[in-house]
Image (cartoon, rainbow, N blue to C red; front, top):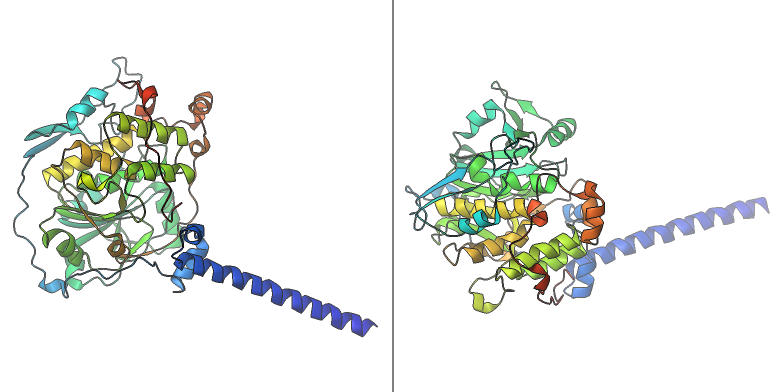
Length: 455
C-alpha cells in the first residue's frame, strides 16, 4: 500500500506539474497571438510595456505587425551633407526670456519654465521676424550641467540624444552605426543623479582623462538639481529643449531611453530631412489622429490625473482646437514622440520652446500639446509626419525597468486634489491652477469614439 501510495503521489505531482506548465505555455501562446492579432479586441489585451512582452520580443517570438522597410540610402559614406543651413523664412532672430516674473518680496523661488502669463503665452504664438519667448532655463530655476560636459557638447554639431530619469530605463547601445557616423555624431545620454547611480551599479561606466563618463558609445550628461517634482516632466527638458542643452548642434535626433537605435543616424537625416527638404520630422501616432482621442486614452491608462487632462483639453477647445479631420490638411494631430529628427532652425527652435511651454504650464503629456502648437502657428510650421510603420523599423523597443506612477494619476476630481495638496506638483503644471481668462465651464469636449486597438 505504501508503494502504491508513493507511486500515486509521484504521478499526481508529475501530472499537476505538466498541467501547470501547459497552462503557462498556453498563456504565453495567447499573449503572442493577441499581440500579433488584427482583431481590435484581442490586440488591445496585449500590454506591450510588460516585461513578458519585452522578453518575448527579445526572443523574437513577437514583432510589431505594423513595421515596414524604410527607404533609406544604401551607404552613409555616400550621403551628401548640406553645406548651408536651411533658409530662415519667418523667424530670423530668436532670443529667450531668462528672468522669472516673481513677487517683489522674493518669497517665491524661480521656476525653470518661468511664470508665463496667459497674455505672454498668447503673444508668443504671433510669429514675427524677431521674437523673444519663454524657453526654460530661468536663472535660479535648477538644472546644472558639469563644466566638462558643457565644454564637450560645445563641439557637437550632429547629435543623437536620449535620456533616462528616475532610473526608469537601462542604457541600450545603438547598432548598425557606421564609422563615419561615429566620428560625426555626438551620442549624448542625459541623466539625473538617481539614474546615474543606477547605471553605475548595473552597467560598466568608464571615465576618460577629462572626467567624462561613458557607457559604450554614449557620453553621460548629468543634469543636477532637477527642475520638477515629476520625473516625466523632467524628461521633457532634453527631449523638447535639445537646442537649449546643446546650443551648437546643427541637427539632432532624439530617441526615448527605452529604445535601441538600429539605423545609422546619417541615413535618418537623409531620409527624413534632406531628401524632401524638410527640417522637422516626427512619426504619426499608431492609433490616434485627434488630441481628444489621445487624451481619452491617457485618462483610461492613468497617465495623469483625469480631471486635469480634461481641464487641459477644455483650454484647447476654448481656444479653437478642432478634432482632427481630413480637411485640416495635416496627416495627424498626434505624434509618436519617442523619435524627433530636426534641424535647429530658428522656427524649429521657436516651435520647441512653445511646445515645452505648454508642457510646463499644463500637463506633462507632450503628445496632447504638439498638434495644438502646430495649430496655433497657423500653418507656418509644417512638420513632416512620417508613417508609423517606418517609425517601428528605426528601433528595438525594450521594457521599462518598472511601471511609473505618481499619486496624482489616481485623482478622480478637482476637489479631491484640492483636499490633498500633497498630490500637486509645486514647480510645473501651475497653469492648471491659475485663473484662466475665459469661462471654461461652458466648454463641452468633443465626443470620442474608441475605434482603435488602443481601446
